[in-house]
Image 1 (cartoon, rainbow, N blue to C red):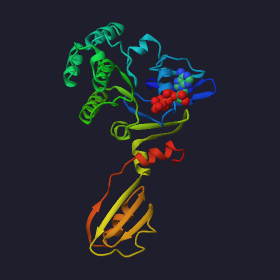
Image 2 (image 1 turned 30 degrees about the vertical axis):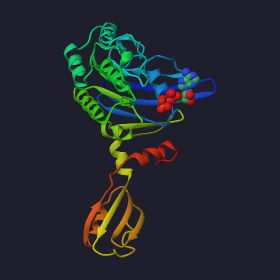
Image 3 (image 1 turned 60 degrees about the horizontal axis):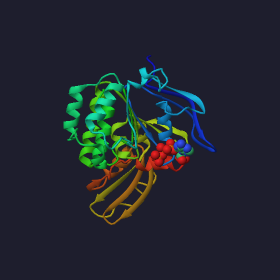
Length: 296
Ligand SMILES: Nc1ncnc2c1ncn2[C@@H]1O[C@H](COP(=O)(O)OP(=O)(O)OP(=O)(O)O)[C@@H](O)[C@H]1O
Protein backbone atom coordinates (compact mmCIF):
# COMPACT_ATOMS: atom_id res chain seq x y z
CA UNK A 1 0.00 0.00 0.00
CA UNK A 2 1.41 3.44 -0.83
CA UNK A 3 1.38 6.07 1.91
CA UNK A 4 -1.94 7.82 2.34
CA UNK A 5 -2.07 11.27 0.75
CA UNK A 6 -2.52 12.75 4.22
CA UNK A 7 -1.95 11.12 7.56
CA UNK A 8 -2.15 12.69 10.99
CA UNK A 9 -1.44 11.08 14.33
CA UNK A 10 -2.54 12.70 17.56
CA UNK A 11 -2.23 16.06 15.80
CA UNK A 12 -2.80 18.78 18.37
CA UNK A 13 -2.52 22.56 18.32
CA UNK A 14 -3.09 24.77 21.31
CA UNK A 15 -3.13 28.55 21.26
CA UNK A 16 -2.79 29.50 24.93
CA UNK A 17 -5.81 28.01 26.65
CA UNK A 18 -7.59 27.23 23.35
CA UNK A 19 -7.16 23.75 21.90
CA UNK A 20 -7.84 24.45 18.21
CA UNK A 21 -7.02 20.90 17.06
CA UNK A 22 -7.28 18.08 19.53
CA UNK A 23 -5.56 14.70 18.96
CA UNK A 24 -6.58 14.34 15.34
CA UNK A 25 -6.06 10.91 13.78
CA UNK A 26 -6.91 11.05 10.11
CA UNK A 27 -5.96 9.27 6.90
CA UNK A 28 -6.97 10.66 3.52
CA UNK A 29 -6.55 8.01 0.85
CA UNK A 30 -5.00 8.66 -2.52
CA UNK A 31 -7.56 9.49 -5.18
CA UNK A 32 -10.45 10.33 -2.86
CA UNK A 33 -12.28 13.58 -2.24
CA UNK A 34 -12.38 13.99 1.49
CA UNK A 35 -14.84 16.56 2.81
CA UNK A 36 -13.75 18.33 5.97
CA UNK A 37 -16.69 19.87 7.76
CA UNK A 38 -17.34 21.67 10.98
CA UNK A 39 -18.86 24.80 12.41
CA UNK A 40 -16.99 28.11 12.56
CA UNK A 41 -14.00 27.89 14.85
CA UNK A 42 -13.95 24.07 14.81
CA UNK A 43 -10.29 24.03 13.83
CA UNK A 44 -10.43 23.30 10.09
CA UNK A 45 -8.13 26.09 8.94
CA UNK A 46 -5.70 25.37 11.79
CA UNK A 47 -5.61 21.71 10.67
CA UNK A 48 -4.80 22.81 7.12
CA UNK A 49 -2.06 25.16 8.31
CA UNK A 50 -0.59 22.26 10.30
CA UNK A 51 -0.76 19.93 7.28
CA UNK A 52 1.09 22.46 5.16
CA UNK A 53 3.72 23.03 7.85
CA UNK A 54 2.86 26.74 8.17
CA UNK A 55 2.62 26.24 11.92
CA UNK A 56 4.06 23.58 14.20
CA UNK A 57 1.88 21.23 16.21
CA UNK A 58 1.86 21.33 19.99
CA UNK A 59 1.82 17.53 19.87
CA UNK A 60 1.43 14.76 17.32
CA UNK A 61 2.41 14.79 13.67
CA UNK A 62 1.14 14.99 10.13
CA UNK A 63 2.52 13.68 6.83
CA UNK A 64 1.68 14.41 3.21
CA UNK A 65 2.69 11.57 0.90
CA UNK A 66 4.86 10.29 3.72
CA UNK A 67 6.72 13.57 4.24
CA UNK A 68 6.23 16.63 6.44
CA UNK A 69 4.04 19.17 4.65
CA UNK A 70 6.78 21.81 4.82
CA UNK A 71 9.19 19.57 2.88
CA UNK A 72 9.63 21.11 -0.61
CA UNK A 73 9.20 17.67 -2.21
CA UNK A 74 5.80 17.34 -0.53
CA UNK A 75 4.87 20.97 -1.10
CA UNK A 76 5.38 20.72 -4.87
CA UNK A 77 2.76 17.99 -4.97
CA UNK A 78 0.18 20.16 -3.21
CA UNK A 79 -2.14 22.79 -4.65
CA UNK A 80 -3.39 24.95 -1.82
CA UNK A 81 -6.32 27.31 -2.11
CA UNK A 82 -6.54 29.35 1.09
CA UNK A 83 -9.82 30.71 2.44
CA UNK A 84 -8.37 34.21 2.62
CA UNK A 85 -6.38 35.16 -0.43
CA UNK A 86 -3.73 37.63 0.58
CA UNK A 87 -2.08 38.60 -2.67
CA UNK A 88 -0.18 41.82 -3.22
CA UNK A 89 -2.78 44.01 -5.00
CA UNK A 90 -0.15 45.39 -7.39
CA UNK A 91 0.60 41.98 -8.87
CA UNK A 92 -1.26 40.83 -11.94
CA UNK A 93 -2.47 37.27 -12.39
CA UNK A 94 0.40 36.76 -14.87
CA UNK A 95 2.92 37.91 -12.24
CA UNK A 96 1.47 35.44 -9.76
CA UNK A 97 1.56 32.59 -12.24
CA UNK A 98 5.24 33.35 -12.96
CA UNK A 99 5.98 33.63 -9.25
CA UNK A 100 4.29 30.39 -8.21
CA UNK A 101 5.62 28.67 -11.32
CA UNK A 102 9.22 29.43 -10.42
CA UNK A 103 8.61 28.54 -6.77
CA UNK A 104 7.35 25.13 -7.83
CA UNK A 105 9.98 24.53 -10.49
CA UNK A 106 7.54 24.78 -13.39
CA UNK A 107 3.88 24.38 -14.19
CA UNK A 108 1.54 23.13 -16.88
CA UNK A 109 1.39 26.03 -19.36
CA UNK A 110 -1.39 24.82 -21.71
CA UNK A 111 -3.52 23.73 -18.75
CA UNK A 112 -3.05 27.11 -17.07
CA UNK A 113 -3.93 29.00 -20.27
CA UNK A 114 -7.07 26.86 -20.55
CA UNK A 115 -7.95 27.60 -16.90
CA UNK A 116 -7.69 31.36 -17.49
CA UNK A 117 -10.01 31.02 -20.44
CA UNK A 118 -12.37 28.70 -18.64
CA UNK A 119 -12.76 31.11 -15.75
CA UNK A 120 -12.69 34.18 -18.04
CA UNK A 121 -9.78 35.78 -16.23
CA UNK A 122 -7.77 38.58 -17.78
CA UNK A 123 -4.22 37.79 -16.58
CA UNK A 124 -2.97 41.33 -17.20
CA UNK A 125 -5.16 43.05 -14.60
CA UNK A 126 -3.74 43.89 -11.16
CA UNK A 127 -5.23 41.69 -8.42
CA UNK A 128 -6.22 44.83 -6.50
CA UNK A 129 -8.64 45.80 -9.29
CA UNK A 130 -10.46 42.47 -9.26
CA UNK A 131 -13.79 41.67 -7.64
CA UNK A 132 -13.94 39.14 -4.78
CA UNK A 133 -15.15 36.43 -7.16
CA UNK A 134 -12.38 37.14 -9.66
CA UNK A 135 -9.78 37.06 -6.90
CA UNK A 136 -11.14 33.66 -5.91
CA UNK A 137 -10.63 32.53 -9.52
CA UNK A 138 -7.00 33.69 -9.34
CA UNK A 139 -6.69 31.53 -6.23
CA UNK A 140 -8.09 28.56 -8.13
CA UNK A 141 -5.66 29.07 -11.02
CA UNK A 142 -2.63 29.24 -8.70
CA UNK A 143 -3.78 26.10 -6.85
CA UNK A 144 -4.38 24.07 -10.01
CA UNK A 145 -1.72 25.39 -12.44
CA UNK A 146 0.93 22.77 -11.63
CA UNK A 147 -1.61 19.92 -11.64
CA UNK A 148 -0.62 18.68 -8.21
CA UNK A 149 -1.32 15.26 -6.76
CA UNK A 150 -3.15 16.71 -3.76
CA UNK A 151 -5.49 19.67 -3.60
CA UNK A 152 -6.07 21.28 -0.23
CA UNK A 153 -9.03 23.56 -0.72
CA UNK A 154 -10.30 25.83 2.04
CA UNK A 155 -13.77 27.21 1.24
CA UNK A 156 -12.96 27.10 -2.49
CA UNK A 157 -16.17 28.51 -3.92
CA UNK A 158 -16.98 31.26 -1.45
CA UNK A 159 -17.70 34.36 -3.52
CA UNK A 160 -18.31 32.45 -6.77
CA UNK A 161 -21.66 32.63 -8.51
CA UNK A 162 -23.59 29.35 -9.04
CA UNK A 163 -22.38 28.90 -12.63
CA UNK A 164 -18.76 29.23 -11.59
CA UNK A 165 -19.36 26.92 -8.64
CA UNK A 166 -20.51 24.30 -11.13
CA UNK A 167 -17.51 24.96 -13.35
CA UNK A 168 -15.28 24.54 -10.32
CA UNK A 169 -16.93 21.25 -9.43
CA UNK A 170 -16.37 20.02 -12.98
CA UNK A 171 -12.72 20.96 -12.72
CA UNK A 172 -12.36 19.09 -9.43
CA UNK A 173 -14.01 16.00 -10.92
CA UNK A 174 -11.64 16.10 -13.90
CA UNK A 175 -8.63 16.29 -11.63
CA UNK A 176 -9.92 13.42 -9.50
CA UNK A 177 -10.46 11.37 -12.67
CA UNK A 178 -6.78 12.04 -13.43
CA UNK A 179 -5.92 10.51 -10.05
CA UNK A 180 -5.61 13.58 -7.82
CA UNK A 181 -6.65 13.59 -4.15
CA UNK A 182 -8.77 16.41 -2.75
CA UNK A 183 -9.05 17.62 0.81
CA UNK A 184 -12.07 19.90 0.73
CA UNK A 185 -12.91 22.08 3.69
CA UNK A 186 -16.23 23.75 3.09
CA UNK A 187 -19.38 25.12 4.66
CA UNK A 188 -21.28 24.56 1.44
CA UNK A 189 -22.85 21.23 2.34
CA UNK A 190 -24.39 20.46 -1.08
CA UNK A 191 -20.96 20.97 -2.60
CA UNK A 192 -19.36 18.55 -0.17
CA UNK A 193 -22.18 16.10 -0.79
CA UNK A 194 -21.71 16.42 -4.54
CA UNK A 195 -17.94 15.97 -4.56
CA UNK A 196 -16.81 14.02 -1.53
CA UNK A 197 -16.78 10.27 -1.11
CA UNK A 198 -15.99 10.51 2.61
CA UNK A 199 -16.36 13.22 5.16
CA UNK A 200 -14.82 14.02 8.50
CA UNK A 201 -16.68 16.27 10.88
CA UNK A 202 -14.69 18.38 13.28
CA UNK A 203 -16.17 19.94 16.39
CA UNK A 204 -14.18 21.93 18.91
CA UNK A 205 -10.99 20.53 17.44
CA UNK A 206 -12.07 16.90 17.72
CA UNK A 207 -12.99 14.61 14.89
CA UNK A 208 -16.51 13.52 15.85
CA UNK A 209 -17.08 11.26 12.88
CA UNK A 210 -15.47 10.00 9.68
CA UNK A 211 -17.91 8.32 7.34
CA UNK A 212 -18.53 7.52 3.70
CA UNK A 213 -21.14 9.82 2.16
CA UNK A 214 -23.12 6.74 1.12
CA UNK A 215 -23.17 5.55 4.72
CA UNK A 216 -24.45 8.94 5.87
CA UNK A 217 -27.02 8.90 3.13
CA UNK A 218 -28.31 5.58 4.42
CA UNK A 219 -28.65 7.07 7.88
CA UNK A 220 -30.14 10.37 6.77
CA UNK A 221 -33.81 11.09 7.26
CA UNK A 222 -35.98 11.63 4.24
CA UNK A 223 -39.27 13.41 3.96
CA UNK A 224 -41.88 11.66 1.86
CA UNK A 225 -45.18 13.30 1.02
CA UNK A 226 -47.74 10.86 -0.34
CA UNK A 227 -50.86 12.34 -1.95
CA UNK A 228 -53.81 9.95 -2.18
CA UNK A 229 -57.29 9.90 -3.63
CA UNK A 230 -59.17 10.60 -0.42
CA UNK A 231 -57.86 10.53 3.15
CA UNK A 232 -55.46 7.66 3.88
CA UNK A 233 -56.40 5.25 6.69
CA UNK A 234 -54.89 6.25 10.06
CA UNK A 235 -52.37 3.94 11.62
CA UNK A 236 -51.06 2.54 8.34
CA UNK A 237 -47.53 3.91 8.63
CA UNK A 238 -46.79 4.45 12.33
CA UNK A 239 -45.37 1.02 13.10
CA UNK A 240 -43.30 0.59 9.96
CA UNK A 241 -39.52 0.28 10.28
CA UNK A 242 -37.70 3.59 9.95
CA UNK A 243 -40.79 5.80 10.23
CA UNK A 244 -40.06 8.66 12.62
CA UNK A 245 -42.98 11.03 12.17
CA UNK A 246 -46.36 10.74 10.49
CA UNK A 247 -48.86 13.50 9.88
CA UNK A 248 -52.10 12.81 8.07
CA UNK A 249 -54.19 15.28 6.14
CA UNK A 250 -57.27 14.96 3.94
CA UNK A 251 -55.41 14.16 0.76
CA UNK A 252 -52.41 12.25 2.00
CA UNK A 253 -49.70 11.88 4.56
CA UNK A 254 -46.34 13.48 5.33
CA UNK A 255 -43.70 11.11 6.63
CA UNK A 256 -40.17 11.36 7.88
CA UNK A 257 -38.27 8.12 7.40
CA UNK A 258 -34.83 7.14 8.57
CA UNK A 259 -32.94 4.69 6.39
CA UNK A 260 -34.66 2.50 3.80
CA UNK A 261 -38.11 3.57 2.59
CA UNK A 262 -39.04 0.12 1.33
CA UNK A 263 -41.70 -0.62 3.98
CA UNK A 264 -43.36 2.77 3.43
CA UNK A 265 -43.50 2.33 -0.35
CA UNK A 266 -44.96 -1.17 0.02
CA UNK A 267 -47.63 0.08 2.45
CA UNK A 268 -48.43 3.00 0.14
CA UNK A 269 -48.90 0.55 -2.73
CA UNK A 270 -52.21 -0.48 -1.14
CA UNK A 271 -53.57 3.07 -1.53
CA UNK A 272 -54.55 5.02 -4.62
CA UNK A 273 -51.49 7.20 -4.83
CA UNK A 274 -51.79 10.27 -7.03
CA UNK A 275 -48.41 11.82 -6.40
CA UNK A 276 -45.30 11.29 -4.28
CA UNK A 277 -43.05 14.16 -3.39
CA UNK A 278 -39.69 13.63 -1.75
CA UNK A 279 -38.16 17.03 -1.08
CA UNK A 280 -34.73 15.56 -1.54
CA UNK A 281 -32.64 13.51 0.71
CA UNK A 282 -30.53 16.13 2.11
CA UNK A 283 -27.64 15.36 4.37
CA UNK A 284 -27.79 18.84 5.78
CA UNK A 285 -29.91 17.87 8.80
CA UNK A 286 -27.56 15.02 9.60
CA UNK A 287 -24.50 17.24 9.27
CA UNK A 288 -26.11 19.83 11.50
CA UNK A 289 -26.83 17.21 14.14
CA UNK A 290 -23.14 16.35 14.22
CA UNK A 291 -22.24 20.04 14.33
CA UNK A 292 -24.45 20.53 17.35
CA UNK A 293 -23.15 17.55 19.22
CA UNK A 294 -25.70 14.92 18.28
CA UNK A 295 -25.24 12.51 15.43
CA UNK A 296 -25.60 8.79 15.28
N1 LIG B 1 -3.23 32.21 15.54
C1 LIG B 1 -4.19 31.97 16.45
N2 LIG B 1 -4.09 32.44 17.70
C2 LIG B 1 -5.03 32.18 18.63
N3 LIG B 1 -6.14 31.45 18.40
C3 LIG B 1 -6.30 30.96 17.16
C4 LIG B 1 -5.34 31.19 16.13
N4 LIG B 1 -5.78 30.55 15.00
C5 LIG B 1 -6.95 29.96 15.32
N5 LIG B 1 -7.26 30.20 16.62
C6 LIG B 1 -8.44 29.70 17.34
O1 LIG B 1 -8.53 28.30 17.09
C7 LIG B 1 -9.87 27.89 16.92
C8 LIG B 1 -10.02 27.20 15.56
O2 LIG B 1 -9.92 28.17 14.52
P1 LIG B 1 -9.93 27.79 12.97
O3 LIG B 1 -9.72 29.07 12.23
O4 LIG B 1 -8.99 26.69 12.75
O5 LIG B 1 -11.41 27.27 12.79
P2 LIG B 1 -12.21 26.94 11.46
O6 LIG B 1 -12.87 25.64 11.69
O7 LIG B 1 -11.33 27.08 10.28
O8 LIG B 1 -13.30 28.08 11.46
P3 LIG B 1 -14.04 28.84 10.24
O9 LIG B 1 -15.01 27.85 9.69
O10 LIG B 1 -14.71 29.96 10.94
O11 LIG B 1 -12.99 29.28 9.27
C9 LIG B 1 -10.71 29.14 17.09
O12 LIG B 1 -11.15 29.19 18.42
C10 LIG B 1 -9.74 30.26 16.79
O13 LIG B 1 -10.13 31.44 17.45
